[in-house]
Image (cartoon, rainbow over all chains, first blue to last red; front, side, top):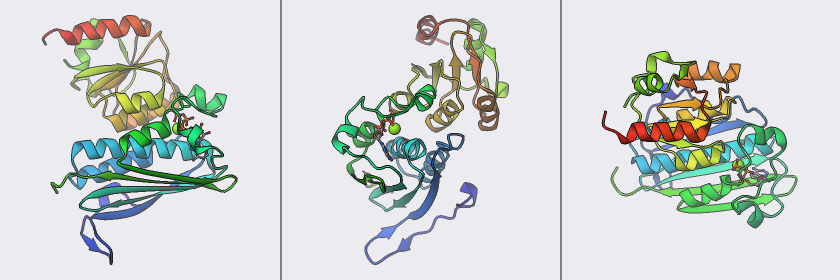
Length: 160
Length: 113
Ligand SMILES: Nc1ncnc2c1ncn2[C@@H]1O[C@H](COP(=O)(O)OP(=O)(O)OP(=O)(O)O)[C@@H](O)[C@H]1O
Ligand SMILES: [Mg+2]
């Protein structure tokens, strides 16, 4: 992982599109003492890139909810962050139990969080719902006993 | 209005980041469900909750809250305090229940500084 204060921001060119920043961050399943640190780091990166407040705010909410879900339900996972001049792309991949009924899991209020997780203030069944609300494009796929994959795109108004 | 003024007026006990009491409070949010607070609170809010677990510090840091007030004399857990000191998030304790504390702060913020 990169130390946040050592980041250098340069524009790279791939075959498909210019990107301003791309990196990958590991998430440890079950470790609630670190939960939220990836989202906090990503927020600082996006701020440093000079993205509009609204984009930073939405990205932070999305990353936080996805990170907490990996910590709460999966064994391990990672977040890929790619910032282009037009979008913030966030992909979260995990190894874990997967989600048997995605439509149900997306419903506000549906949660399988256990007592321990609920005692910490999680388990309102709002995470995936919030991710959907705050993203411009949201894809989710999952395989039971394998893992879950989320792809989120947040559009940046043309001003950077 | 800064945190110090609110803390004095409402007899809050400061448990961490006492050097950050000049943080400006621009609003408030009351809630114990972290996803709700994540989605609906704002930067500069004072967050009123009865959650004492360390994850409140991550939420307050990410949302850039002015500080956290624990209600009903709930004390922060030890690792919550350690994190709050590290992240410079003021945590305060009130003996009031959430409803009364929220009302009191709402009234304070409604007035001019
Ligand atoms: N990465 C994941 N792996 C396995 N199951 C998941 C994953 N993410 C979500 N789920 C399932 O979907 C349900 C709904 O998730 P969601 O994030 O919306 O709510 P929650 O985590 O239960 O509560 P909240 O996010 O409000 O704290 C979870 O309770 C869980 O059963
Ligand atoms: Mg969740």
